[in-house]
Length: 586
Figure 1 (cartoon, rainbow, N blue to C red):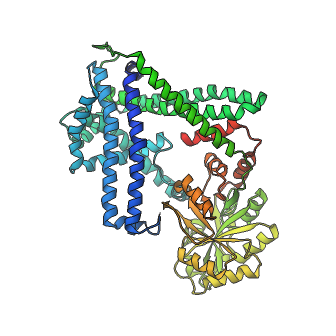
Figure 2 (figure 1 turned 180 degrees about the horizontal axis):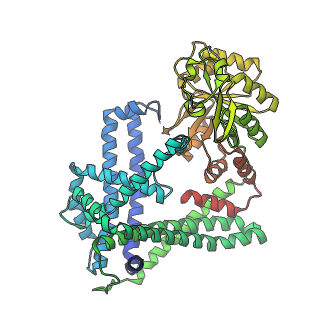
């Protein structure tokens, strides 16, 4: 523990001592990312769409898109660019830390030249080892930093539905995190040692971690805990004036909220940059066992005049962010009309897709109840999600091969609750009695009758709910046919993935939350196409999309979503809005 504390103090001391160098490097890095990497990535993607003739990428066409030779070459190019960016960004930090801890003079040009010489490894088979290394770090990064790449919620939720899935998930993630930690020092070793290969760096990291893993974990935990405490402390102190003004001088609350949010956004960017710098210092110190708080052989010369243009730039950025945030917060002062859609009914205290769940969802105040239907062997419609009975009944059997009568005799169970399978007719009758609309998702298994769509339309007509209920499916062609059969019926498409602008001929899109952007929301509103977001079970996700006033949020927690929608009104304090937005940043 004493050694861990010394390493941390050394890291903080060096960052402060060389603060001007770090300001310059991070300013260049962020400027490079903003002005070059992001625009170039967007342009390359648009070119790929134009060359391949696609309007947007979904799970239905991604395989053919990825198989196109031009797309393959562009993806390889993008991977190389991303790898090089990571290498140069972290390489600069590692080499700076190494020279600082050794007390050596250094120049940015010399560091750049050293990194250029090692960059040749990226144009050989050695790059594959770097790809593996970064892939191993992804689970560790998503565990530490919430905004990094992670498994989409709909996949993790499905995996977590069963005990075996949960055990497998925990086992795989645990192994990847352990392997990632043991490979953690590959990049600093590779960048600092002039003649070592990526593979040898990976091997050295693995060997070193046998004796240094415990210290690495301790320092990492201390670093993250300290970072979070500083963030929390700054957030509390900086939001205190807004808290007081909202209660004693509400007329000044909006502008103060915009300035507070701008300040915290800038602080969080600085803190993240400091986290990167501290990481580099700690990793170098642990890898090379550099002297603790050694005296510098020279003292860096800092000129006060350098702070003047920096202060001016910071002030301009703060003013611009404050104005943008004030306008954005002012626009968010409304009572949203986002529909709360209960996913498979209200599953808390009930089994999914059951009449009990339907009744509970209606009682909770849900605007729509989402259910899944499939056609049975006798051409009827049963309310059931899975293609097989295994998960909910523990028995073998395929829905498409069984009659509705056979299915309705079975008992389904989940989370300690039991219930019966029901027909679509049962659901429509109960929904009519409760005066609540259904969002019916048609699950296509490939054994449907030719008249499956006319049968569904006729059933909705008989119950006189054609104009009130919604129907969606992941089968685009079937939904296009359904819209032609029943122009008054609100028809939608379910997508688990979408990249790019969306042009469809339906009434609404149901899209997994990971792929939704502000640009897509604006495009769909312009096309007068509704957007339903699934499946939102975290408070901050519900808050985000309700605040953006999307047309519907599909959730397992309709009561929580309704409470958030109720609070999202003109009477809600701006402080709460600021805190909600900060959750999206970190």
